[in-house]
Length: 297
Image 1 (cartoon, rainbow, N blue to C red):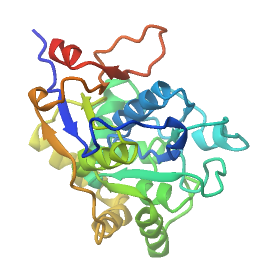
Image 2 (spheres, rainbow, N blue to C red):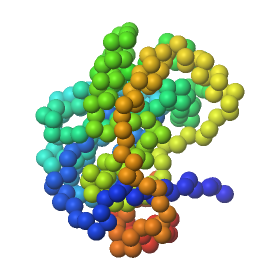
Image 3 (spheres, rainbow, N blue to C red):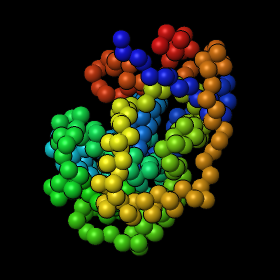
Image 4 (tube, rainbow, N blue to C red):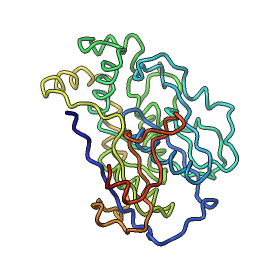
């Protein structure tokens, strides 16, 4: 029997009795780094955009030709290049280098989530195995030599580099740190709930209930140690960036994890879960629901 993942319920600190003027919500651009809980964030905010009758855009595609999707896809930044945001848009996301989303003239906030480099790369490796892009026995070096992974790809994306091949240096780390720290919402994956809560509190949404999307199975310690050692030559700058990037940042702690009995009975809850089956076949798996619906789940 399959065990369902725990449904997390957060109170963001917003007034449960408050009203929201959806026309006044500030658009949000998500610089989506692969395997950093970004898919969960996408489902939550895309669902919110839909509920507010405001367009949301996900620029689909890969970045640096990385085959983490298990399929061949065009670079996402190429799809974004020359695009324009629709009138009234609320959210845009994609595996796109910093600064290469369509120009918004400073009218949007930015968000990005980072992750400990070994954990992120191992998660990408395991997803590629699961999706048939390579085998569990494939050598990490072979993946980089074949262009299926890009070295220091977190720094590469956040410093705004579009090429997989240019050798990066410490100046690129400084640029990536500066870009990351200028974002309104940014932090490590361990702070995901606080980041999500801060965004929704600014949007005056009091409650969010969610399951994580695209969560892989934990591997054996021995396998993790082997992969960490194999990835080490390709993540030196990412490691330096990660150690610097979250310093001096303060993520709002108004958010609290609560139980369903703590939710105001009359309040709507924003639910994001793979268990939702969309009516129109689209892949946005979130919606505003009642407390009773949450109890059923």
